[in-house]
Image 1 (cartoon, rainbow, N blue to C red):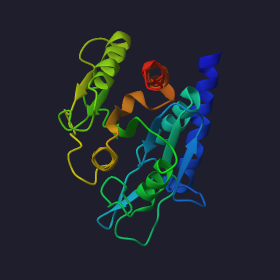
Image 2 (image 1 turned 120 degrees about the vertical axis):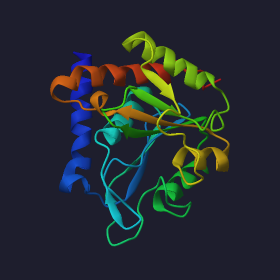
Image 3 (image 1 turned 45 degrees about the vertical axis):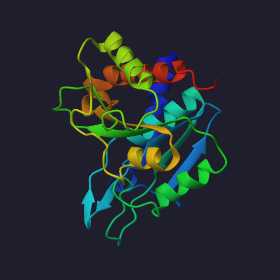
Length: 228
C-alpha cells in the first residue's frame, strides 16, 4: 500500500510540469524546497522544456517528479525548473552561466544551508543499455567515490550486474554543467545522474520498474552517512 501511495504522489507531482505541453505553469521559473535536514540537494533542471541556443529543447519527463518526491521521502532539499522562459536565447541551467535564475537560486540557498551532496537528475534515452549513467568527470566532481560505488551496488542488487555505468554517455566536464559548476564553485560532491527513459516512466508497462528504481535511489540516499 505504501508503494502505491508513492506511485500516486509521483504521478501527481508530474502534473505541474506537464502543464502547457511541458512548458510548466508557475509564478517562479525555479523553486528550491526543503523537506528535512539531510544535507543533500536534488535537482531537475530539465523538468520542463528549455531554450538552448535559441531553440526549444525537449523536457525530460518525470525528472521533476522524481526529485520532488525523493526529497519528501528522505527529508532533504530539492530544486526544479518550473516553467519555460520564452523570448530568450538561452534558458537551460545546464549550459547557462552562473547568473541564470536556477543557479542564482542555488547560490542563495547555499548561503544559509550546508549541503554535502548534490545530485542533478536527467533523462537518458531508453535505447541506452544502462539503467543509470553516473556522470562525475572521471571522479573529479566528487570528494568521495563511495557515493558512486554505493549507488552501483544498490542498482546491481536490484536489477543485476552491469546495469549502471560511469561517464559512459556523458561525463559532466563542461564548466556550466550543473554538477561541474556545483563542485567547482562550492566544493560539494556533485553527481549528474542520467536515468533511462524506461525506468522513469511511471505509466503502463514500465510503471513497476520505474518505481523499483525510485525506491532504489531512496535507499541509496538514506543509507549515506552524511549527517556525521
